[in-house]
Length: 307
Image (cartoon, rainbow, N blue to C red):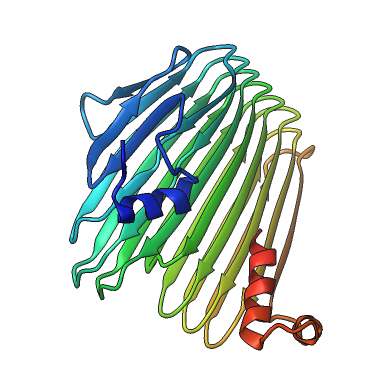
């Protein structure tokens, strides 16, 4: 299948797709399935009661990937989708998601994705979600993702949540619930510019013995953009948890970082670090001495910071 120029640009940016990938695939465009394929070990079924899909990974599946990107190109569309992922025991898979909006209109376009992960005992998941906005219209590009992660005993999940550029408004909500010896790492990378607004709320409930979680956030706020980051680590058993947020602020931007630790067990060990600051002058001088312009030096620093 050949994608249009706009579709191809969005899919390449959010999911590194230049052609239809092999394996299990679900590409959604403007509220409708564009491509849907299952594989022998991974089944993708449409939900019967609401928009969305159920992705079921067989126990023991190893080394397979699932691609589920969403693109929005229709002016004024407010897309809503509910996706459920059931990862069977001892499976090990990568899930590539993300949403790209191209808006050349004066009307707002948006996508709300509600994702629930049910990760069975011993399973391992790597999840990558990238958000991106493009187009010359004055209408906003709005993305509001909700992610709920339920982790069985001894399971492992690493989630990379990225906002690349061009998203005018976003409210991101992530919830985690962990059983014994589970491990969860959430890495969030966020860039805002112009008048954009972004709010991220993450809450991890460590309910099992010897479970461990990390929340790592890096963000850059440029121009007159506004960011709020709230992260709560709640230890309900003998466990470990760490929250770290590091931000670069530029221009007239505003950043609020609100880490929270709640220990409900005397054996819970919870820590946090938070820092907000501007780009160091010596970094700029060093790069400019190598022949980069000031703008090129700033972009290089930001790219490295958000990598």
